[in-house]
Picture 1: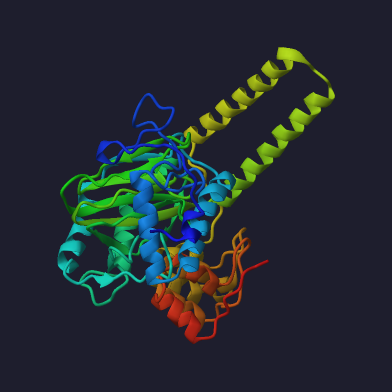
Picture 2: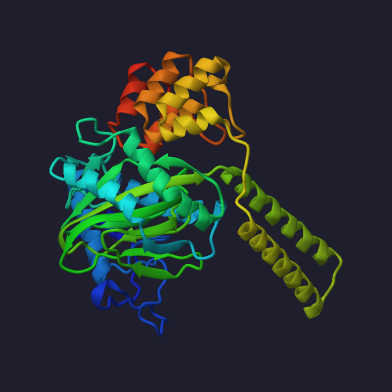
Amino acid sequence: MASAGILDYFTNRKMTPSRGGHFEHASASDPNDYGVDVSFPIHSFKNFDPNSLQGKRYYGSMETCAARYSESQCMSSERARVNMNFDQPRSQHNYTKVGFRKQKLPEDVYAIIKTFYENNKDKPHLENWPAGNTYTNHWDSPTEMISTEDGRLRGSGTALKNSIWNGVKPILQEWSGHKLKPTSLYGIRVYHHGAILATHVDRLPLVTSCIINVDQDVNEPWPIEVYDHDGKAHNVTMEPGDMVLYESHTVLHGRPVPLNGNFYANIFVHFEPFDHAAMNGQDKKEYMERHKAAESASKRKVGGHEADNHDDAELEQHRREVERDQKRRIIDVEHLPLNDAAAAGNLGAVQSLVRKDPSILNKKDSNGWQAIHEAVRGGHIDVLRFLVENGSDINVETVNGGSPLWWARRALDPGHSVIEYLESIGAPDRLDE
């Protein structure tokens, strides 16, 4: 029986699971048409029914998490996940109308990934999750990682990562309408029977992303549940060689139904638009302008349907202009070559740029990012070592962020060589307040 502390997060609400991992919503004529907090606690614990099939699965899993770690650790992770699901998407720019798209991965890119997988699928390591972390039910069904960073694996390293990034970047740039820089690509995660992936949004700077199914051995499809920008759930099935493009920073995604099969292997490839901060700033500015316009109309006391129609017409015209402009162009913003090379893990380019002009080592972009931050969040240990040994500042903090070690702890798995290196040289873990 679940403890009172865990059960306190639930209230009774009738929602009946239907067959095949889909769910009936209380008001839906279409059994596949449902929103948040039906298949999993997403925005709230109060609206999630503990008496449904999914509810029993969920709080049963939380019980085993608490037995492995502690109730406070597990529920703290859950509160953070749900709060982030609710808060982060509201403050971030969306680049596409729907938020996700499924298609085939180019065969040459899939061949690169599949070759690395086949050469090393018998050499995975147990994925190291922080104590109480609830993004996967690793206490019940441990996940494994075939790391692109593991120098012991055949074909791993910077060249592999760059081949994958370069292979999918044109697709994601065309889809999003913006130029992209790589942010994360850490390896192939292998899920096993009974695995669940909690519904979540990805931490920044994971913005424009794709999931690639590398291999699977399942008894039935294991769909990824994604919520479009209108809040409607979609269950997307994948076969090896399929890719799902998604705005991972705002699109809720997870696999709330346990995996029925032997394994399911995915690789996750992440980018951020060069102008992401600028787009967020533009959204905020437009929101404030609309708010001021509404206040001004109210003060003019324009009444009845005429005022409403006038405001709606202006907003609709503005929406169309913005949408047309975004479709017409890929936005190009000023960026720093050294930052780009560090983000891509291109050690040769980094060395060449620094030797030509050592003063660029600590040059910041408009968001306060230096090459050292880019190397850290990309997990590029060789680039990081070179930058530090040649004078990069391990104390420097980004705008709306922290020191290199602060970013490393948020962008990389615990125990990553980048984190261990920064700790070994006494780098501070500090947030810019």
